[in-house]
Image: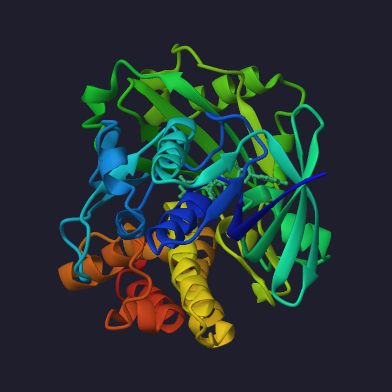
Length: 415
Ligand SMILES: Cc1cc2nc3c(=O)[nH]c(=O)nc-3n(C[C@H](O)[C@H](O)[C@H](O)COP(=O)(O)OP(=O)(O)OC[C@H]3O[C@@H](n4cnc5c(N)ncnc54)[C@H](O)[C@@H]3O)c2cc1C
């Protein structure tokens, strides 16, 4: 059997894996990646947040993405019937990027992977990890390629960025249920020639369809727009006798904000369904490995935190891997787990606040204080590590007490 020796093996060539590989390669290490699929491959997660630009920049990937001309994103518009709350990333509390992109992920992830390859990272596409054996922090990973050839990679460190594949948690039984209830999504890419009438495409739109059900509208530079419904499994059960296409067509036509724009437009593929995505793991690191991106914890698509948390965690992990390979001691709990969870927990508050209606009170109140709006805008831009921002530092308490204050003072506005 063929055996290769590398410094670092990265599993998965999504944004999390490519950011980790880019940063570790830049420090001069020999990095290999193993990716199960042939690229471009479909994955959901198309609305980015400004904070992820910092990770792309540090990994040396930003210019390659800029060159692709993806749709720029300057904010997010939330709608509930006739109520509108528009967040513009220019008006935020934390200093940082005030824009990002809306991307078909197949093209975006391929751009990142090609750029890390160009920088000298060896990517084994259509190759799957089947086993890992650790001996201290050294490891031997067994991989199998599309032709069935089995080989081994010996590494000093493994970064597991395998997303929904969850390679290390599955091999070592580390999966743990999330504290969020199960949700489901039905989505497609839709032809969108009427986007200009809706003052788009340079931001995403989030619609409250029912109190617990919401819709994303994410225009791409190609003239196609991603439209997805997210709700409880019971919400979708009402339509379970229909084909996915008939279901999505029916739902689009039942939503006044979508009917005229998308009602008769072509779906670019048979609508897809995803469910039960919220999951976490018993441990985020071990001797010789670290988990990044979706493998750590994925919450919910609301607020588009996925790629940002994925790239921020791999940015942090990559720098710690370098520190350890240089012979320094890393306190993985303090330096990786705590800051990673800080970001996840801030978003968890906002996700829970969205579904329990607390955030609807805040977003759709008539005269939200501009300073407060800026602070919330920074959270929505992904700056969830800026503890100077009260909406980050005391996220849980501040969101609840602001909603209670609004309920007491403007009860007629609260639906
Ligand atoms: C309905 C829905 C909507 C979403 N919308 C958004 C959004 O608008 N914005 C956003 O930021 N996030 C969104 N997300 C989340 C987003 O999909 C993920 O957070 C993001 O893709 C995580 O990136 P990653 O690099 O960790 O993993 P991935 O992008 O999943 O990449 C992991 C890679 O690992 C590979 N792999 C898996 N198993 C193996 C194996 N055994 N061997 C080798 N390779 C393997 C996979 O093929 C894949 O290419 C959404 C999620 C859902 C469920």
